Length: 248
View 1 (cartoon, rainbow, N blue to C red):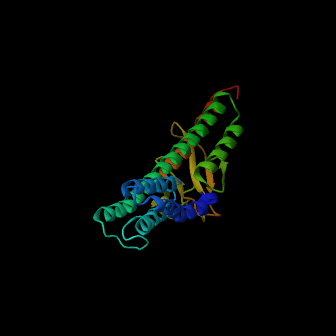
View 2 (view 1 turned 90 degrees about the vertical axis):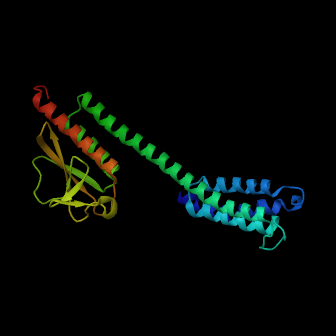
View 3 (view 1 turned 60 degrees about the vertical axis):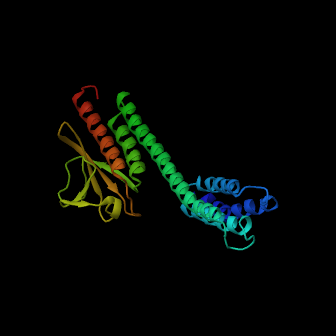
């Protein structure tokens, strides 16, 4: 988004000005309602980038230049006609509404893309297990997936049970520290200690992933944390399967 943020903000300021000024030669024959619709199209085009300030600026700019160029008295920021006042107000309201809709749509698109990525990671791990990959290969695969899904610095796997006072990423996606729930969405994952994600299968602990989020605050949402739990459970199932198979 940063790569095109400044050009979009520039367009939000000047595109309504150019369109409104371009309609000046036709303002005596061109209905103001149609002019307002053209400016709405400009607002929609800017808002489609999902940058809230740009959408708001485009709406305000459209209202200002609609008033200045296309309403009586011309070339003054004054409106005498009630219909023109309503059109100006609607430009701002519609612009704000369209911007919020565009932002919501982009968030939904991004969420769908993330979900597809999470599913791909889980499927990749499942395929590695189905193909009989070694436990080391499966663990390395999951370590990579956990780092990406949780957006953390990294993680490592250790055999054995969990430590009593270490922060825990639990099966329900919650993060606790000494029985106190950490509000991850607000405060982020703990940065001063490794977070333990227990690897288990059928109630038997097979090991633990130690998650590190020290260099920056990571705020994975509940969905991301549940994906991490599912990945750890796959490792638990793989380890249990290999332990029970004499061929492994």
